Structures are given as structure tokens and as C-alpha cells.
Length: 91
Image 1 (spheres, one colour):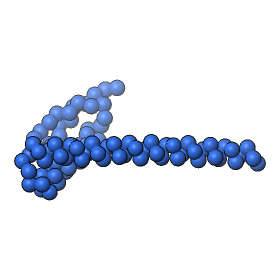
Image 2 (cartoon, rainbow, N blue to C red):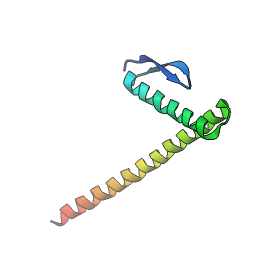
Image 3 (cartoon, rainbow, N blue to C red):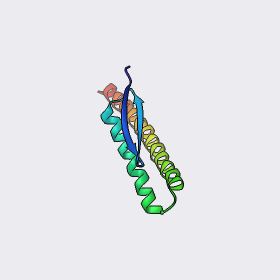
């Protein structure tokens, strides 16, 4: 898959990202990250390095909770599929 370079701004700095994802998607990722950094800085009034670490921890927390929810939902879908197949066998 072809990789594309995308310039983004996070934390007031420009970064060049290289990804097989679209530039639009990478802009969304950067905007989400930038928003998380700004919100943490405003909420904590800590120096940038400390607030950035806290923002990274919060983003990792969001990711892990989302992954856990996906795992739970996949298991639920699998259970429902099995139930549906067993009921179809009853007909």
C-alpha cells in the first residue's frame, strides 16, 4: 500500500506523518491529539511535559477501554449468532 506524507500541527508544532491512511484521517488523528493536549494543559495548569504525559495516559486509557468494549461486543455478537443458529435448527 502506498504511503502518504501529511503535515499536521500538534501542540503548536508541525509534524510530518507518513502513513498508508488518508491525509484526512491523519488530520483527524492530529486534531484529536492536539485537543487532548490542550484540554489537559488547561485542566491541570502543569508544565507542558507533565500535562502531555497525562494526556498520553488518558488517550491510552480511552484506547484500552475501547478495545475491551470491542472484545465484549464481539463476544456478544458471537453468542447471538450461535443462539440464532440453534433456533434455526429448531424450526
